[in-house]
Image 1 (tube, helix red, strand yellow):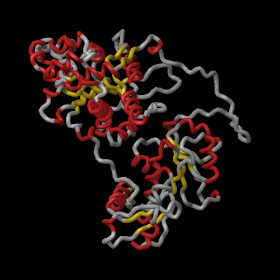
Image 2 (image 1 turned 180 degrees about the vertical axis):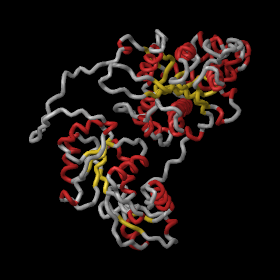
Image 3 (image 1 turned 120 degrees about the horizontal axis):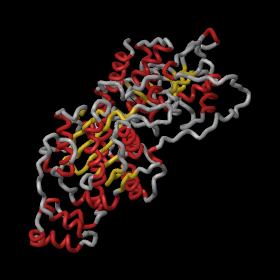
Image 4 (image 1 turned 90 degrees about the vertical axis):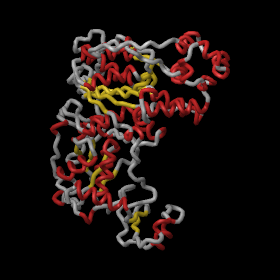
Length: 531
């Protein structure tokens, strides 16, 4: 059902619309690798990200990086159309010989002519360095410069707008939502990146994660240019930087700007007026990117690097996995309960063992009821859409004890992806289930099958997706809906001349109606649940 406060699916992001050029690189003999080598010599801005399969907490090793994402923003004269400006490369580190690309990446990481963008990339660099060292690249990677963290960009923009510093580091999806107005799904972040071939969803997810870094930088660059935060330097056109010194001085506007700018150093004057010589690329296309033709950053980007740029430098301590300092488990402060033995759970083999608390045989009413923790909140909305009672914790970040108390009091089964909660199984006997699937649709099917739930078409869209309440059974007329919505909800004018019935939630009073979104949702869950 449609509501005036619920949003339709977000419009595909600019990043997703631009994912026209994704190259999967698994060999140095492939055309994709030659394209990567070319793109790196014709780009002055790249976005970096990495994916790996997590290791268990007790293992004193770093995860092995399985995929390196490199989004290249081609220089303006290398692309013929707007959508040609960005190319994303997915470098398969599980297949490619790492020593064969080590020098190439090391050169890129420290090249002064390429601005590297990342989000909390230091951890990625530590894991990358460890992965390459394990394959015979003794020194690994110890630095990335010039570098600009997307979290730093957001902090500067937020501080200018609110004149207050941001509290804590926001997530990348939060930053994309606020700056670009796009929804960046992170559901596949914890998928198994060691399985080949990667799914199409995994490739798109990985490429989007790298490309959105460039999109955020573009937003930042436009904001800096608009506000004139770098003074008159932004007024020097990039074309004038290729002129000789005599030609620049003949241009009255350019010469005035350059000679009157206090921030312009001699080294940048030399760089701006130096003759650029094109060297032939190596035939094998491997390594020595610095010796290939590469343009310097344009002047605007160079000034942003000077003002906001940073670098990542790894120390000897960074190269050593940190081991847990805890000597043993703290004794539980919970009174009235006692765990007789320590139970070790293999979370991959964890299965539901009933009966559920709603089972009639144990005094229940026969109606399934779940409590979805913060890790599976999306699953809660899907369950509500198919008519299942699915609550969420009362507080935003509940302690384990709060979650347990709510589940026991309301006779619900806790759904979670947090393996740590399984330790409390002795408190929640037959009231906790670890969801194994990552995607919401798959999670929904998993729960339906594990608990043998019966879903019929009449149940679809029978609960409020906002608060989990039931609907008033009698539909409201347009007049009744207008009266109920006064001072609470706005009904779109386009519905006035249509013969439409409305439903209202018994708990939060939210109004719903059968619009396009309702019919699309019904059809979706008919297909997902195979009704």
